[in-house]
Length: 126
Length: 126
DNA sequence: CTAACTATATCACATTGTGATTTAAATTCC
DNA sequence: GGAATTTAAATCACAATGTGATATAGTTAG
Image (cartoon, rainbow over all chains, first blue to last red; front, side, top):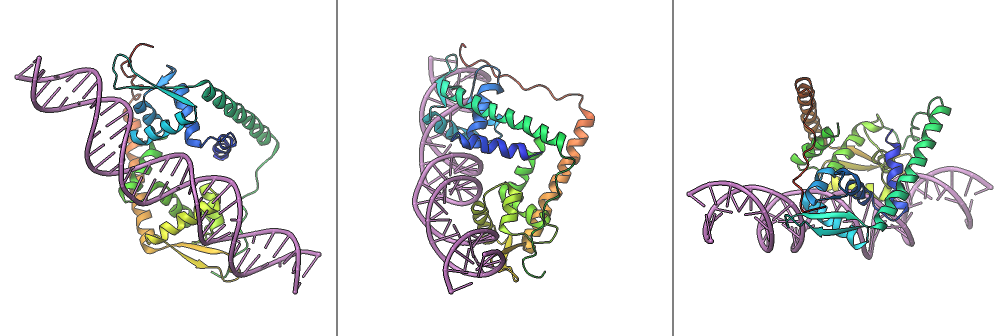
């Protein structure tokens, strides 16, 4: 269920990337089908305000995951692209996630039902 | 789809509550079926580390949404409960969300297909 | 009683998000 | 053309969130 989401976040952190930055890389790589995206498009993809995305992109650029360039026709736009480093990291995370998906699928085939959540020993009367 | 999630977050903000705090209230109210929850349980529910939850609960307590009490049997535990104010706010948000769900359902019945995402005018050659 | 364990707290710090305002470029309208 | 409007992005001060490391109690095991 949402256990994969959790794993996915951990996978990103294992490569010293925050979940948000991972999402950013995904958006830049795939959201537009163009290889680059504008701040506003990324804000739409990430369901956030544009100024939050400006900061996110700045930090990702500092880490060399992403680079910015001005639009040529319309110089108000910013084109955000992956760097080769960004590409590499995104691929590593994706590979890990695919592996985890396979493991989950395997597990589902094996186990009839995961045990229900364990209620902790009562902490005082209530 | 995930549009409801987005709405849900906005609904929380309209009542001056962050999405995280809304999730916290939900967890306290329902996760254990007991009316109260420990920090560790909330960390499980919120998929976060316990120290992140400590802070979240502290801020929510400052706002009077939640109150803390020591466990009696085992005084290491903390019981987090909703205050009446917390209850009231959680209900308001829930009512709003239910209304939105109905609206969405209605919309789905009406519209054959939402238009595909609009590609922005190209910002320079590429 | 000591050692190990458990639940929570605290700390310093980076990241993320928000509302308000600003800058710069492009477009519209006269 | 030039003023007004619109648009995309940046900036600011600030609050909220999350992280790793470490600390402090309380509890249990030996």
